[in-house]
Length: 70
Image 1 (cartoon, rainbow, N blue to C red):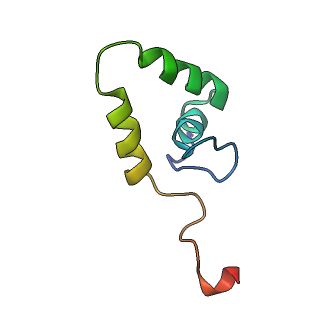
Image 2: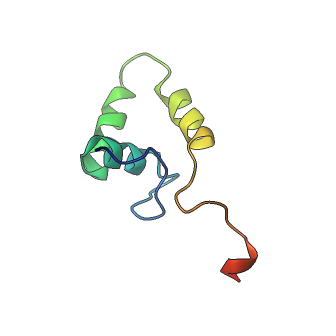
Image 3: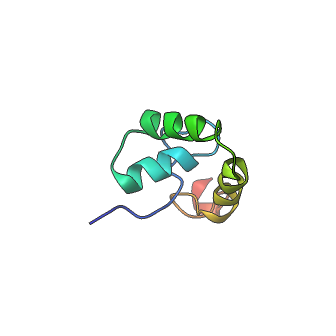
């Protein structure tokens, strides 16, 4: 069974989108980052998709700033 599509707290470089996609599809975060960078050389909305995933994917571990984390 595949992992849930979330932005993990570990292995983040910017927002964790590539790390989350890598975990979901069973590759390494570095491989997913290389795929994303190569895809940016092609015409298309790759950067906009990345921004949308950054906004729409939940962060792993739920909300930040709860009273329990103090």
